[in-house]
Length: 434
Image 1 (tube, rainbow, N blue to C red):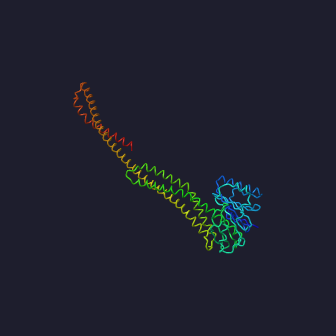
Image 2: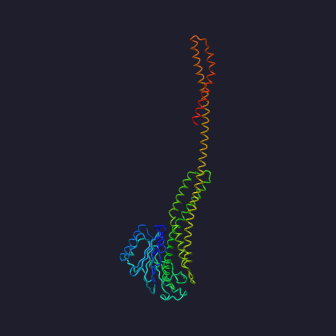
Image 3: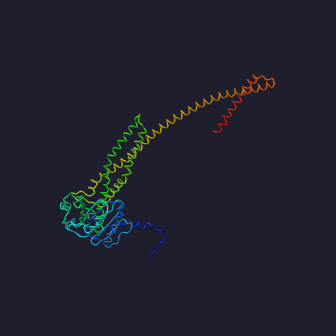
């Protein structure tokens, strides 16, 4: 009887995440086997359409269709098997049949798939490959010295190969697209188990797919190289002009802003492609490492061939991406320097303006003080005259008053009163502004 322990409630995704490690298990039932593999580059709408197209195949053969929102599916359809996987940018279809022929590539596994259904697949083909796992006796392969005899399966092209999975199999290819539009992998079974065979086929197909997907960035890198040189020269011209005393800083700042926008546009437009190329290249390296290759005398191994042909292209992509990033930083530094220079010039202009304003204010103050002095004299004069008029009126009334004496004596007193009054007004204004 099962004992249920009182543990906390399960996370909603616990079982989905736990079972993810079993989601893409090898899909080989027996040996020998022949397989065909397609990798299709899809848009979002095409991904929705291909799911419906896969359901029509299931309905045609009476097979349970894939569940909603799953990204992988495997099933047997009468004389063939299908394995479908949906990835971020592409989807893959693997078709398997279990028989052997004298020529492993004479009849592919795809010939068992309905032609009308195949013709309606969506997307663009990135990789198309045939693979066959056969025993050495089936193709009269005696030993590693008989490599020349294998060339007939690859249109007499130079072949690449090695022993893999601890010597349990030998794998050969020419990494070329043949007249049928497919590349080829020939696996000679020495001591493969069924599960090993499934994993080996999957690794070989993934190496081919990830290798091509990684190279998607290479044409972009070559196209961007002239743009990079042009932007670099333009930045040099601008920074060189910044050192000249008679340059127009506003014009240079406008040019730097436009250049910064162009550089950032290149980076943002192609960042995903370059990052994806690096990730795909790492996956290729991992899959090649998983093969556990042992050299066959006279042949390049998969790892050597891919490293020599793929690594320079990826290094070019990484170099272009890195140089654009550095260029963006240099443009940003130049813009900051130029803005600092412009800010200093503006600050100096503001300082000169403030100095000029202070000088005007000082001059206005001096003029105001002079006007105040004149006003004090004028007020004293009118006040003294008013006092004289009052004295004349009193003298006319019969009072013994010397009008001129009264008017003259009143002048100092009037002036003192006016000075005290003006100072008090200044004090009141000062207290109010504070």
